[in-house]
Every structure is written in structure tokens, then in C-alpha cells.
Amino acid sequence: MEGKYWDIVTRQLAGKASASELQKLEDWLAESPEHKADYQAQKRLWQLTPPSEIADTDVEAAWKKVKSQLVDKQPAKVISIYQNVWRVAASIILLIGVLWLAKYFLFPHFGMEVVESGNRRIAVVLPDNSQVWLNKGSKLIYDKDFDRNERNVQLEGEAFFEVKRDVERPFIIHSNEAQTKVLGTSFNLRAYPDEPLVELAVATGKVAFSLKEQKKEVIVTPGFAVQLNTLSNELRKEEIPGENAWAWKTGKLQFANEELKNILPVLERYYDTEIELKNSALGTCRFTGTFQQADLEEVLQVLTATMQLKYIEQDKQGYSLTGQGCK
Image (cartoon, rainbow, N blue to C red):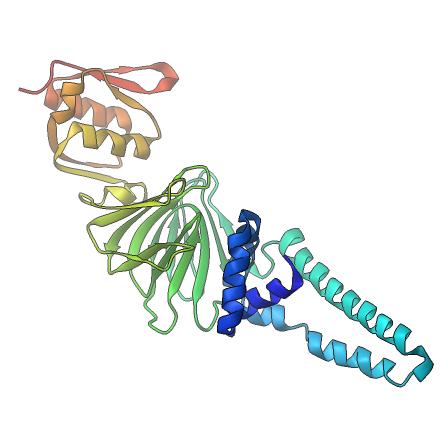
């Protein structure tokens, strides 16, 4: 990133940029995708790091010190003096840049707490006493001491959040191309890096969900979910039945007069397998029931007995359901 634009970006993120600087930044971002990528990288680091950490190095003071040491030189050396001034100043700026880059690229999570769930489901208590349950294969990154104005975390994977209410410090989750902002509520967020969809389902309270580069927010309330396609930037809001969106946390699957074609995707996600309907007419068969900590074969046995179906295990490829359809 060019020096003058780095300065403008820093001022913009700090809320101190002038109208003319904002216009320059907007024009620069429109020039190429690379500029947007640079901006997003800088913004991400700014959001996750308290500004005081970057401001610890006083460039202006260092510059004044260098200048004071050189202004007393003999007049005959004026040209070389200024050349030296700029060289030293450039060296200082370069050194600061190297240290800054080293911090974030050699030690990308310096000052951060990084929690990875691996093959387990684990619970995490954040500095503000908010609680997070991480699903398998998930990662949570957060500052050891939340900022005064915001509580920023980064999620890769799936997690259920119970956020402690704090009207003075909104809780912001950065995940893929999405941003989730709350004051105090509970919800499930799924945002695996290798999946194109980011999904949010709300249990209690209100949640503001948006694309990172857009100001428009979608307000999501209990009983509803929003889905973002990161490839097309399409947002879709829909009603969700029960609490199956976070069944991985509770171990409870609940269906109320639900069609089989809607039940199977829930089972596929929960049990991490594939279930195929050999007869599409079976999709309209309805089922009501609750499963608690049940294994997949138990669930399939209940479904097939209730709907007079048969299920066949397809080795490691999953299962298939066959039958004549519902009467």
C-alpha cells in the first residue's frame, strides 16, 4: 500500500479523515481489486487490534529528534543534510513498517487469544464473561483485553454465542465476508472458510448482520435465520423451525409436522453424512418427533418405521431411503 494512502486509511479507520481524504480513498479503492484487498487487510488488523498498539511508536517525535541533530550542521552541507534527513526518516518509517509487518505476519496473533476446537466441541469464556461454544473444526480469535469501545472477535467455523449485554460496547464478529453485530443476545453462526455460505440463526434478542463492505444491515430476530452467499453476495432471510440450527450444541433434534425433504438436510449436517431419496415423492411425507443424543441409525429406524420406508447404507457414501411414498 502506498504511504499516503496508508495514512489516509489509518485516519479513516480512526474516524479522523476529512471529506477530501475520504474521496481520495474512495477513488483509490475503485482503481483495482488489489487496492480493495490491501484496504480489507488493514481494516481487519485495525478491528482486531487496539489502536494504541500501533500508536505506541511516535513517528513525529522520532522525526523531530533526527531533524534537531542535523540542523546545526554547516551551511555548505545543506543539500547532503536534507538528503540525510530524508534517508534517516525513510529508514525510521521502514523500520516501523518492518516491525509492524513482523508483528502481524510472523506473529499474526500477537496479543490475541486463539482457540481451536480440533475434533472436539468446547466452551470458551471471553474477557467480558460472554460464553462461546465452538463446534468441531472451528477457530476463535479475540483480544485478551477487549477495547474500550468495541468487543471484536474473529470466527472460522461454527459457534453458538451467549453475549453479555453491554450497550456501550457492541460485540462484533468478523467471519468470511460477513459482520455480525450485537449488544447482548444468543445466536448460532456458521462460517467455515471452505464453505461459500455464512449462516446466522438467532435464539434470543436481535442481531444485525451485514456484508463487510456494505452499510446496509439485516436485523434478525428469534425464529429467523439469514444466509449469505459469499460468491454472489446474496443475502436471504428465512424462518427456521425449532432449535435445530444449534442441535450440534444441545444434542437435540426436534421436528413438528415437518416434511421429509426438509428433515434430511438437518440430519446430513448434524451427522455429517449424505442421505438420498430414491423416490422424490417421499419428500412430502411428514414427521413429528424429538431425538435426544440419538445416533443416526436410531433416527433412520424411527423415520422408516413411521413412514413405512426402508433405508440402505451405501458404504462410506451415506444412506438412501426407498419406499412407495406416503398415503
